[in-house]
Length: 392
Length: 97
Image (cartoon, rainbow over all chains, first blue to last red; front, side, top):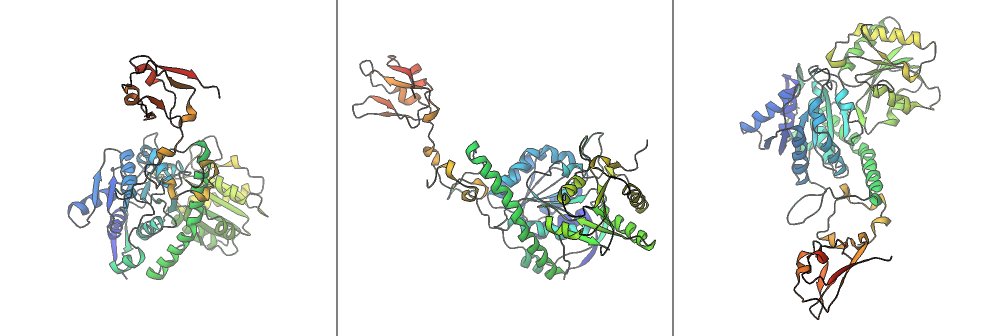
């Protein structure tokens, strides 16, 4: 087993990318992702990591370079946030359609405007339907572990899809946490060499990104959808094997104090830990409260989620993004769809909070619980979402 | 080519829709884009080959007699050959289905 060190999460993430023996890194610095990319740049410059670090002129170029390097069979990594993700958007959709197993860390930050550098989930929710495997992490250890996981899943020949590892900007990127590193032998055991399904090589010319007429486009999209759905078996296998190797077993849907809970909080990302504190406080008051956390966002873990909330009467969905003039938060909107027409469908309340780094404390979650109990006495519709803490 | 594009199911597609056969553009029939076809008047043709050189799709071939004709599998009917012909021996005529 590896060493446990106190380290900034961004630096640990970069060290994980190094330990994964990445071949190509193409990235443009943007707050709050900067420390990850800076540290990788240092590792390459100091000769600690034998990789090409390509300092591109924009994120659009970063993702374009990543597609090229992945296509020739190089293990490829990039990292961005918010506006950077928006700028690379065009190519973000290309990578999964070409089945290129790029790994991207997305240090979640709000989309402007007003201009902001702080954390919420408006960036990642804007690319919900881009076709990447998308996972959320709650602390530094999960980030480190999921860098290895991401390469392992992405490059598996039956998957061959890009993976986004989401971590909350500042809340995770800039904090120092105790993180257990993997030793080299464990990495080697867990992460085989990258053998691309298709490869650009002069000895065996292939065309990637060919034109698709209306007569074939539908079939291409169906194949891509099936590929993402079917990646789940390899995702589960990769988590199981990681657990066997390092002792931390991850699941698509994590639960906390769930048994028999009448009301559950649903969270994604680092806010989950504060909600767990609120759950403890509410339980101490004798309330029947638990928590469900979505780790796997795409492919959506339908079975595991329905199983987790079976028998639950109320779900408090915490969203960190807004669908203006629409169904409130994107997570709540999906949860309603997933549970629609289930027997004894729970009441779902939706609180939108923590926009652009605004603090949300355990007391705030307790208020949301109390508000939910009150609302659940009447009918709660999708449009009844609450932007929590807004000054009237 | 085992199946035409219209017959392929999603399961038949290569991973990432890669085209793993080089030089397959020759299988693509562009002739059905054509609304006009070039006709050569061999009485006027001096067999200079200007039409052959200018054809952007290499869809003009030389006959055994040294005259030229369009390969209608590829010819899109763009009319460049007729425009460039020195003796105006090429006429574009309507396709009648």
